[in-house]
Amino acid sequence: MPYCRNCGKQVPEDAKFCPYCGAQQVVEIKPSAPSTRPPLGLSIISIYLAIACAIDIAVGILYLLLGLSLTYGASTLRPGLGAWPGLLEWLLTAIPAIGLMSFGLALLNGVAAYGLWSVRHWGWTMAVTLLVAGTIMNIPTSPSPIALIGVVFMAINIVCLVYLSKGDVRKLFQPASSL
Ligand SMILES: [Zn+2]
Image (cartoon, rainbow, N blue to C red; front, side, top):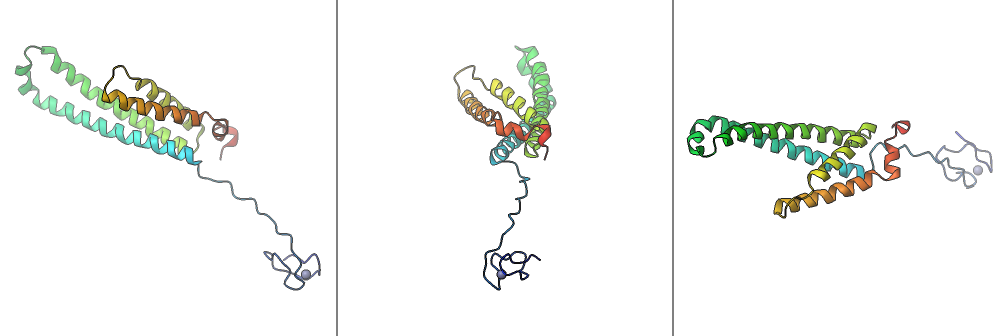
């Protein structure tokens, strides 16, 4: 227990004033524990990537189900597609391929979301790569409602990239400042 600077009597450790003479005591300012939670912006981008992951999983399941139903319905559909004999075969390859690609993207987005959330240095690199890829993929090629959704995603991705490229955010991910 410390002693009062004025009267010399013992005073409780957290006392702001001496209980005997009333003199103000020197209060040690405890250094605040470093925050273990990522900044709000990083949390938001992590959630955005996690939502992208969930959407990718949903799209993957949808395409695999579509592929499966096409496979089982092939014998019924084939006679009706007489004019385009290659179409069914193409769909039977393309649809499951898109489904698997979607699962792959889900995995990448999920891992990036985790890496960003837990402030791993690879999380930043992965998130930036995915956001750049997502921006390029969403460049509209024709005026349509889907292209408009793409433009919205492009804008969100660019805002995320601008945030992640800020000096103080990048600093968090440098190996030297590992938390
Ligand atoms: Zn005192």
